[in-house]
Figure 1 (tube, rainbow, N blue to C red):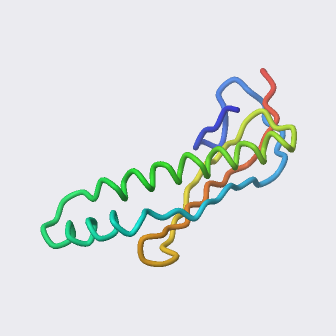
Figure 2 (figure 1 turned 90 degrees about the vertical axis):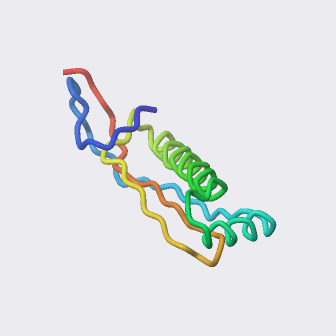
Figure 3 (figure 1 turned 30 degrees about the horizontal axis):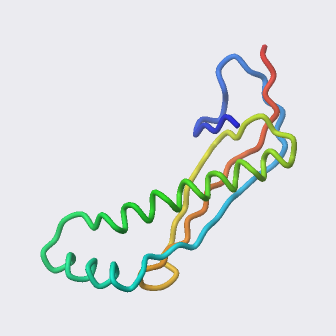
Length: 105
């Protein structure tokens, strides 16, 4: 499944099939949360949360692509991400775009 953040795919005509999305709420364990809390005191990247968000984006993107495939789509255009904090240490990540059938021009 081709997934792009542009509204077109060079050299292809696109038949729009509808909006697709994938979401996940993800958290790290309490020990990592404690370590992350200490990191906020001294500053710098909180690697555990960076990893958590990368994993969440990957999973949300996979779920979105699966939804597109179920519609019979070849690709997703206009990929966007949205995220929000659900509670301390847990975030929701949504991936969304437009499922399309892509045909060579």
